[in-house]
Amino acid sequence: MSDNKNDVSKKAERLARARREVSKKKREAVLSALKSMLNDGTRITHAGVARRAEVSPWFTYNCEGLPEAIKTAVELQKKEAKFTAESLETRVTAIEKEVSSLKASHSDVLFELATPSKRVQGGVATSNVLMSAHQGGNAELFPKILNLFVPDGSRIADVTYGGGVFWSKVDLTRYELLATDISMGVDCRALPYSDDFLDALVLDPPYMEGLLRDNVSHKAGKGSHSSFREYYSNGNENSARWERPDGRPTPKWHAAVRDLYYYASLEAYRTLRPGGVFIVKCQDEVSANKQWLTHVEIINDCSEIGFYCKDLFVLMRTNKAGVTRVKKQVHARKNHSYFLIFIKSEVKRIRSKKT
Ligand SMILES: C[S@@+](CC[C@H](N)C(=O)[O-])C[C@H]1O[C@@H](n2cnc3c(N)ncnc32)[C@H](O)[C@@H]1O
Figure 1 (cartoon, rainbow, N blue to C red):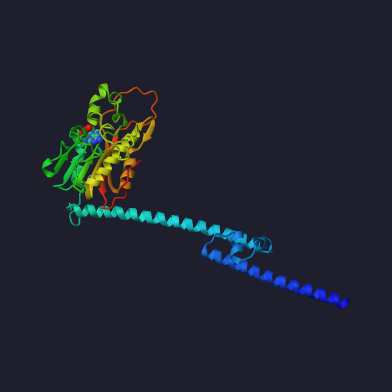
Figure 2: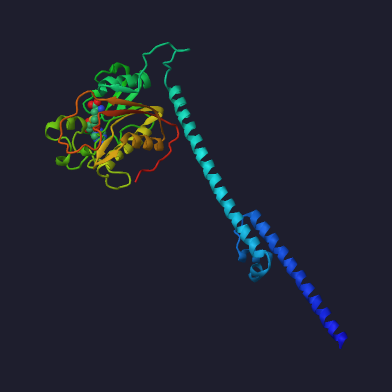
């Protein structure tokens, strides 16, 4: 009897030892599966670990120490993923910065290559340099900008020629001027020039949304302001004559101003040669009680198109503000405008149209 008892307990002991052995092996298999999943980046879950280790999920949940090991591995994996995403993002930003600075210097090189040097070796001591801020009118500043950026003999298209005020003090024998305007039937968003045809292009469309309204009787600058309206806008130049490439209607209000500059800039990019000079006149505006820094929008849009913004001039009017009824002034009255100087880079960054 007692021999029998001994046999049974020995057998049970053997069985328990065998079970412990199996369990130990399974545990090792789970730990090695965890390690390999961490190494190869497979997402860690109880079911996944169990599959790889060829054990049941029940085992991974219930074997002593395994739930904790799996939990730690999952957290480790999450941290690594975050780290990888973060470092990727940092790298992308760094590369983008590098590309844009390379682009800028590349545009400068293109410009220098295509522009006969006006510099003197070693330089000349002088204070007679062109400054970035001016008081006066377009007719005074524009020739100075040409002097600095556009070499003699250049083929220049002024695509919003208007009354030709920009050119009134320019020696026209120095350049080949191609003057067009919507009033002559040429839209600056669809120019009759082939690709890379121009050395320079001048753009000065209406900068106020009030001058781009479809309904002529709703246009800004009526009555005593009619000469202002005539200078800036020659008729119904907005959506009537031009269709957006995407078939959508021309936007309204300030968006119409930005849209006109944008599509004209795309056309400038197409028709200018690499290194060509794009001279843009603009002014910020308050429309629908909101401040619109148009010059910033244009700089951003042109950079996106592939231009490099080489310079910016501020022009301050000398004449006094016209008298208007003001209940309470909320924005400064604008008495300054801008000339932006862009250089066409060789590689166009976008080909598609803005929506
Ligand atoms: C501010 S004036 C230009 C003045 C001109 N820079 C000068 O020196 O006399 C704006 C001109 O843009 C023209 N314009 C408006 N929309 C146009 C378009 N889509 N294409 C071409 N010219 C446009 C107007 O007819 C107007 O003559």
